[in-house]
Image (cartoon, rainbow, N blue to C red; front, side):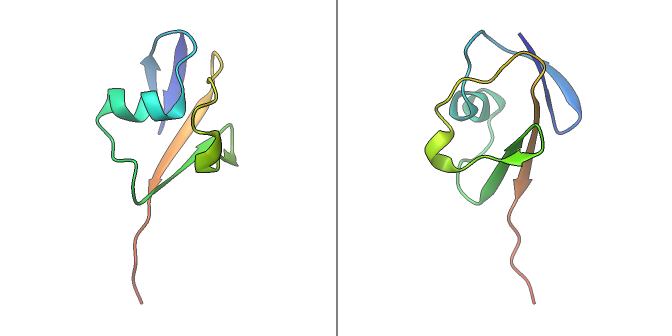
Length: 65
């Protein structure tokens, strides 16, 4: 299955979840936000399967002032 992560095409296994995708890509699960098809996904839904062609954006939270 193909998805796009931060503008890059990535081939992943069928029924992969956000949590599994982050682990596969070596990305942290803390201090980030994830949007799928332009909708922010709450952590409680990170174990839902992604769909073919999903566009995923992973954003790192930054503090500042």
